[in-house]
Amino acid sequence: MTRATPAPALAASLAAVSAAGIVSGGLLETGLPAPPGQWLFIVMCLILPTVGWLVAARRPDNVYGWLILAAADCLGLGAFGAGALLNDPAARGPLDGVATLLASLFTVFYGLTWVFLPLLFPDGRLPSRRWRIGAWIAVVSITVHWAGVLLSPDEVYETIFSRDNPLGLDGPAGLVALLMGTAGQLVTYLVALAVLVSLVLRWRRSAAVERRMLRWMIFGSASTLAGFTLVGLLQFDVYGVGLGVGLLTSMVTLPAVIVATVFRHNLLDIRVGVRGSRLFLVFDLRPTVGELLTELGPVLEEAEPVEQLSRLAEAVRAGLETRWAAVTLADGTRLVAGHEEGEAALTVPAGLGRISCGPKTVGRLTAEDGRLLGALAVPIGLAIQSAGLAARLVNAQEAERRRIERNIHDGAQQQLVALIAGLELARATGGGPDSLAVLREQARQTLTDLREFAAGIHPSVLSQGGLVEAVEERCSRLPVTTTVTADPGLRARRFPDEVEGALYFTVSEAVANALKHAEASRIEVRLTQADGRIQAVVSDDGKGFDPETTDRRGLGTLADRMSALGGGLRLTGGPGAGTRVRAWVPSQA
Image 1 (cartoon, rainbow, N blue to C red):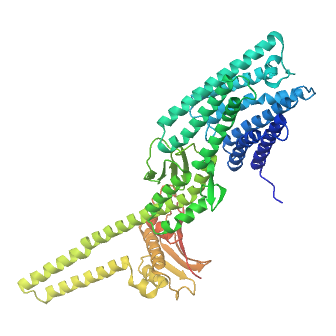
Image 2 (tube, rainbow, N blue to C red):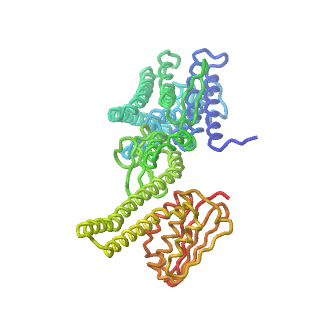
């Protein structure tokens, strides 16, 4: 047996209290059998606790759902209290005071529906800081209205309930209570009018999507106030048709509008679905991180790293329904989806960069939006790392291309030019054996240089003999004592070209650094294969280095090459302690 989580259970309990009060109060007022009009009124009033339960249970972090439930409970408890007072006006009992207290909650219900439900729609937040004073004025006026009605003299209660007020005040105190109730109601009504004007102004300034949403709320707020005005004009004609229409309009229109807006514009992740002839509710419309990545997976596989980031930014914008989203790389490069305008509403770190998004197209960002963006930051951070790695590899390839071009131009090309010039001179002067011998030696030297140059690009021994043989050949020409050891079965093993090439050039760069910078007198190279990886370790007895100040750009490109193959490179050592370079890549056992 599963236990309900606290938020859904609390939401269900509050909705049940409201529904029970609405039904029992309506039936107490008219008795059984209740007329059809009363049943219609009860059903329409049940809209408010229903939508409050849906929103609060599904989005407990949104204050608006709990605000709807608070208004619904005031409606339900007020209806129960009023029904108890109207059930038998001639009866008197010890619970009359409780019924009067409950009936007075109608004033709180009116205040919440007039002011706060329109003002705080749809995320439970004030539209601007300027409304803080207005909100406090509304709270005070609603409280004064409630206290004034609760303590009003018998003359007022006899007009409504045909009975006196067990909690009412007499004489001057009763007059003060009556004035308090009237003043509180008037101020609350004026604040509600200000809220309506504010909604109209927001509607005029908003974009098309938000305007379609706000016009529903403007209609609901205006209808609610119009219904209450109709009730006031008809005074207390309890059984008049006009009064019934006014009450129904003032109590039901706004909840119905909230329901229509939530479902029509897919707010709060709830909408109505249609399957055949049946209607059903669809919750949690916002896609999860897994759903977003599953949908993007095939597209991302075919895209370049930078294009992946652009599509991830678009996924964030669509998933959070924001006006724009941007991925910022470590070098400051920004990839933006949508039209970036204004400051970011939410920013989270993503690996070496960050992901930012603008305001939502409708409403404001919630804590759930922040959690979704934080979860998306993990794959986005990996994509940023991949994009940075790809950029560094491209730069390294371009630098290597320029180095090859420069070496050919300064080396072999100049030697060939000199050789051609020598041949032309020998032909013109009829050069003898000595000059031809010199030219032959120049040609041999040029061939030797070209072979060594080609070996630097990709040594033929690596293609023919494998990794161990190529490393041994490279180290055999070093001017210091160099020892190469390898696992017994490694010499006969062959690995993919990219794996052998990466490890060979890492070893080559490491021994070159040991000679050039470390002034080593002894170098040890060890090649091993274990635990699903092949590893090369180069150690020397040189002067070492300071990890804080040493420039590692030479090995940085090789480290990127290892990372691209799923491996890594680690450099350890210290002043006077020599240097140890460890490089590894995954391999099949």
